[in-house]
Structure formats: structure tokens, C-alpha cells
Image 1 (tube, rainbow, N blue to C red):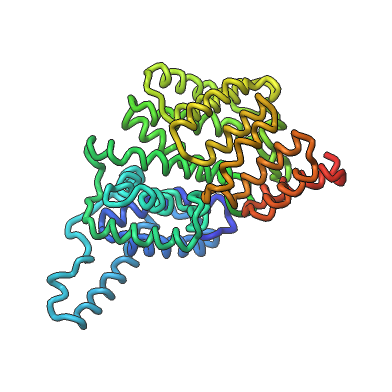
Image 2 (cartoon, rainbow, N blue to C red):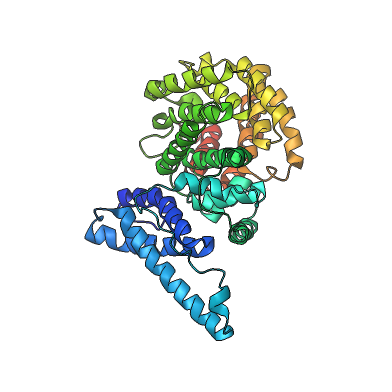
Length: 418
């Protein structure tokens, strides 16, 4: 977790540099948990000194130096402890730094770190959680929210993942082509979740975290450069670009949430839309279609509508139908129900939501209540809409989302006049 700073620019810089410095520490010392602790201490030191003394000429090298000192202190303490426990500890110490391992402190190891965290020694869910923590800089609570599990469960999962990486002895280097293929699915899912958290923050006062979204796009571009013929990599990149194109229209002057159908579409980034549409069009022409490509195609349909009422909802419904057959993600079912409501009416959408009540991943999630509220409002059942908007507002941990849902209650009740 990046410590909060008075200077937002410093905070963004630290978030960008954190995974890069962690990569250097892992290359040198090969101990994930200790390296992460050392980097965290370096970030805290920077958060205290940089706003006061100014950002150093080479901020990454500064962080590497401070983190290296912390790691050296750690290993000295560890070896002293082991000497006391056993006269042979120095000969068998499994956590001693790798001799002769050096790296350029200005080298960006983030892509290597990304693939390393998605090592086959970990289960897919553990790999994704660890990468979100190490590369994305998300808090345990944010990761737990993305996985729809309790925070304590996620903390244990991340801790076990660090130990598994350490025990596996995996070298800190870019995997060969075969290994890249094995890890790619987890890598793409991580990047997808990092972008989602940046585009719509699950916790806190801000609707969007631009640094996370930017980093997800940057890393996805790097993976696309590495694997230019992979259709799902291209699909994910197109999805991010097309979604991020709407960023400026999603919040009002006070940072309040503006839903898609009320956004000022003249603020949408047409250059990004053109890039995303071209990318997904080229990708779909290759034949094999995956989940990210379908989501990008849906985003393109939204982006190409000059007005909300011009949206081609039948096409979106058809695309969600295909996506639903590929995935058991309850969020896909949720969005499919919304599209069905827009095409066939709210009663159809509400009927499609019913199975989600038995899905533990989403049954108590605020989004299910929020969608139900919207569909009940479409159907003219205002008491039910108010009840579900209130339930959603109580459950969300995002302040802009909560405020928006509360405004809907006031509006329907006749108290709020937009």
C-alpha cells in the first residue's frame, strides 16, 4: 500500500515506482516477503522526506538504495539469529542474498515481476491476488473486494502465495515462450482487475484512480508488444482504451458519479476510441474470439453511439449472450440482465437476476441491489426501487457510489431535483 502524501504528484510517482523497486529487490535478494517489507519502508521514508526536501534527481535509485539498506539490515539480523540457533546456520541459510546478482536500478522490471507473480506454483486465484498486491499496489481490502471474499481470507491467500514463490526458487527473469503461454491467462486477469480498480475504485473518496488505470494500460501495451499476435492481449488492450476514453465524462465538478446514459459524450476521447475500435476490429477478424475481445466489442458499441438513445442494445445483448456462455462470472450475468431489460423490458431483466440470489459471490454485493433498483424504477415500482437503492448505498465502500445511490433515493422520493 502506498502511504498517503500531501503532494499528490509524489504519491503517483511512488505508486508507479513501487513495483519497479520491488523487482530490483527480488532480482538481488530473492525473498518476496522481505523485499516487499523493505520496499514499503522505503516508500514510507520517501513519503516523509520528499514533500519536505523535494523529489531526488533519480527517485527510483533513491528508493532502491533505501530498500537495499533495509534488506541488508534484515539479513544481518536473520543470520545473527540463526547463528544463535545453530553453528551451521551460515552454511545452510536459505534466505541469504544471491551472490553476484546485480541489476541496474533504472531498469524497469515490472513486466518480469508480473509474469513471476503468475508462476504455475501458485493457484490462479493466489497468483492474481499476489500480483495485484505487488504490481498493482492494491490494498488487501481492495483485492478482497475484487474477488468477492472476506479481507481476512485474502490476507491469508497472499501470505501463502509469497511463501510459495520463495519455496519454488523461481528465478527472477522473463519466462520462456512456453512458460509465458502458461501464465498469460493469469497475467491478463490481473491487468484487467488493476484497470477496473483504477477506472472505478471500490474503496474511498475518489471514483477513479488514474495512476492505476494508466499503469494497467502501460503494462498491457508492453504485453501486447511482447505478444503482438495474441488476440486476447489485443482484446484486453482495446477494452481498456475504449473504456478509458470515457474517463473525463464520468465525474462532475465535485467528483460526483455520472452514469453512462447521462454523460456528456463530447468529452469522450475520440482519438482513443478510434485506436480501440481499429484494434478490436483487426483482432476479431482473426477468427478466434475470447472474453476480452467480446467485452471490447461491447465497449466499442457504446463508444460509437453519439447519444445514449442511439445505443445498439440488441447487438450488446447478443454479445453478452456469447460472453455468458464462455464465463461463469456473475458480473457478466448482471450485465446481460441489464442489456435484456433495455431490449425486452425491465421484467425480463429482473427475472434474469433471480439466479444471482443463490450465487454467494454476488448475493450480498451492492451492484446486484443497484441494478435491481434501476430495473424496478424502469418498471415504475418506486417503493422497491428505493428499498434496493438504500440497500446498495449501505453496502458499497465507494463514497462516490454511495452518494450517487443516495441521490437516487432522494430523487425518486421527490426530495432531490436535479
